[in-house]
Image (cartoon, rainbow, N blue to C red; front, side, top):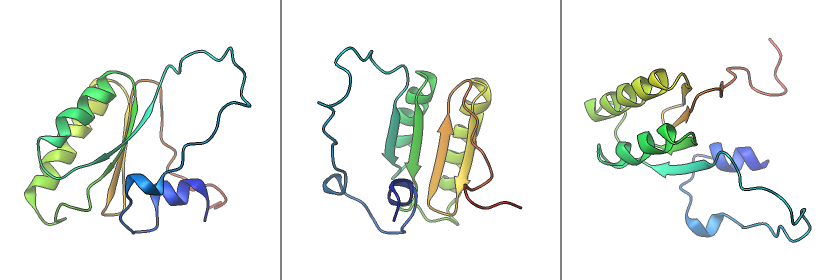
Length: 120
């Protein structure tokens, strides 16, 4: 299973212990601070959308896990609509991956709708 499959797929609930910090001692010591971060978020209710919106407004990418919400619940659609509006305001992008994840990007970052390795 590839790294992105572990992050984006699998259907299993992940915990902080599932993530391994890689040793960057071999990397260049003069590396600059990253201009953008990728955040992983779990959405349990409407209040969690605030942190996601703040991160996108700050220019970061957010992968939000919405499995804790019922897909038929109107809360999910309300949160998705709020996040869609944020993506539109910052000229970013938003996609829903299945019923359990939403990816929101800031200005200048487009999410491809084509899966790697699969040509139409």
